[in-house]
Amino acid sequence: MSAGGLERRESGRAGLELTVEYERLNAFLADYTQNISQGGTFIRTDRPLKVGTVLSFTIRAPQLSDGIVLRGVVRWVVEEAQSRSGRPAGMGIAFVHDSPEEKAALESRLDRLMAQALGPAAFEKLMGRPAPSSLEDDGSP
Image (cartoon, rainbow, N blue to C red; front, side, top):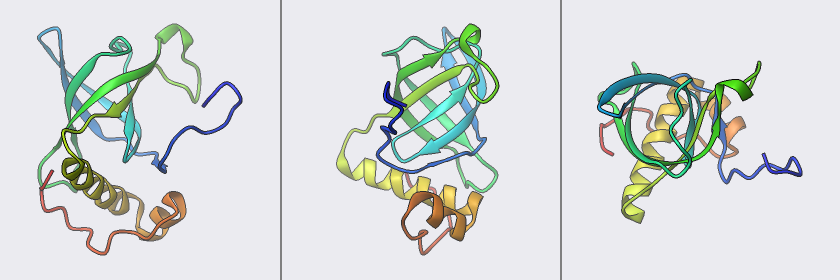
């Protein structure tokens, strides 16, 4: 949220807990998302990376044929000392794309994942748009 309390997000955000795997200082880490949208995610962790860090990570869920490999940049951090109930420690990640086609393919795959997890009616209410016509994950980026 911005200083005035207004929402800055461009797309709806689903509160989904998904496994996230990534490397940090040659160590393989597994944490969880708190929420996800077409534009980014919040990863709950007591070891957040610094703002501006670019990272590659994989999101895994039972309904995915393969994990979704993503790139993102850390936009904001909640340190352990700042965390409280409803605001856990972690890092806000904005997705980074190499092309408009890659972005469109990822957004389509994330829409299918969110619609599968939430159900089409909840997806439509939360996202403000129709659920994807096919909820099958084809494994494409």
